Structure formats: structure tokens, C-alpha cells
Image (cartoon, rainbow, N blue to C red; front, side, top):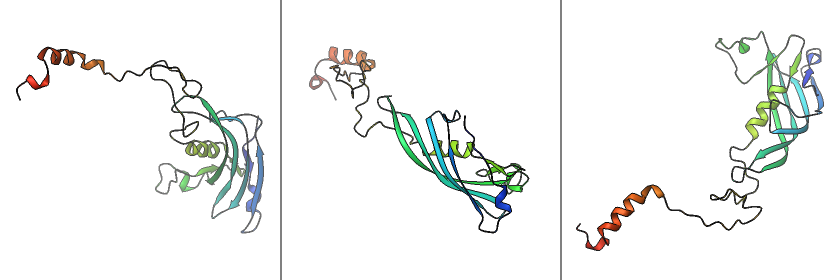
Length: 183
């Protein structure tokens, strides 16, 4: 498996500009994010803030998305910026009932550990485009037979007739040509 927990307690022993750099390598997918289908890595920098820890970095990952037109899976090699703020669990900003609650902050545990799992999950989910396409010129699926038109042309003829209007067409046909009707 992999470990996304980093101990940053050394930051508080250092000076005002203390920082920790880490390379994180997974040995499998992150189950909390189904789009992360393979191994991933991250380079992070954790810096001491004013009562918090700021984490900046880059996540390198293989992201698998389903095309919204043809439903085929396609892979993207992504470099996604990571940016998170970790606060002490006893901080007023960590209390969901308090006035100073910060819903975007993550929790720094008492031992000085930060768990990057939620940061990675939220970052990847927010990075994923809402309407992913395998390519800009994706032809999609045939509306008649469902064939992927990027792979082969099925030869189906599209029928744009809305059959719900058929009873009205029959009435109009019995009335004769439109020029004979009174206005």
C-alpha cells in the first residue's frame, strides 16, 4: 500500500522559515478516488504558518476518465497542484459549531502528523473536468445502434421523426392541404 501521513512536528522546532520537503510514491491506486487508477506520486513542501501548516506541491498521477460522448475510458497523465492548510484539532477553526470554523482546513493531529489523503482526494476531484472528452472531435455513439462512431461507421440512418406527433399528422392529412383550410 502507501502512506500519505507525514510527520511535520519538526517544523515547530525550527525557525520561522522552517519547511519540510517530501517525495511520496504510492504502490497502488487511492481507493477513495476511483479516477486515480494507477500509481501516483507527489512532491510536497510543508511550511509552518501562524498556528497552522501550509502544504504546497504537485501530484503526478494517471487519471482515467470516461468520455461523455462515446463512454470510452481515456487516460491522462496529470500534474495537479496541491495546496492545503492544516490546523490543530483543538483550534477554534476546527470546531464546526464555532464562529471561526474553516471548512477548507484539514486537521493536524496532536503528534504533528498530517494525513494527505483528503487533500489528494479533494484536489483530484476538483481538477476533473465536468464534461470529459477523449478528444475534441469525438463522434460519440450512434443514436440508433449505440456503436462507437470513433471506431467505425455503422451506416445507420438517423430518424429524426418524433413519433409522438403521429396522431396529429394523421388528422392534418385527413384535413387536406393547408391551402384549402380557412384561416
